[in-house]
Image (cartoon, rainbow, N blue to C red):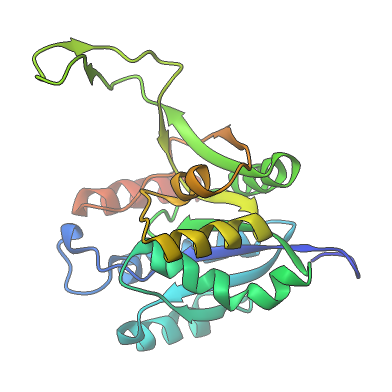
Length: 239
């Protein structure tokens, strides 16, 4: 926790999607993983990271019973629950509006936004994103995209390599100074802009620099059934 009078950071875990590609009838972040639900692993990582003072879980009203189970039986930290919107960006905005009062008074200085379907994020990566976001304004973790090629022209007939130093596969959490983040999201909402992720919204509506932080191979996103198997194996090796 922050010292008295100091500003604090927030970890926002997004869990308001459906996850139909994973082949489950329920929201994928509430599927079982190594004895607990997928989303609880992320919440626990944020709760154990020094400097994260507040946890926010963005959910769907239909998942209320699942949320109650996770917060009562799997997460010991206090978690604030916010209902999300139709899109990821609307859900992020809902969380920021929930935090508005504390952002405007300076109680909250930095916000980290994380996909609840990435259960293997480490406290080390969360801490590094927080450090870089506070120092520079924004931080985006990612891995170099060594296996991507680009089309050289509009016809799609020519293939070229964009270079290993120019592309990364973005991960979460993505962290930003809180006030500019809220302002950018309100501007995006007013103009009807929908970005691909948090960083793309900030790039369009803010001059805040976003620094790249080296991501983690293990920080996978649970999208398909085999991703759960991989996550189970990683957690088994860690135990």
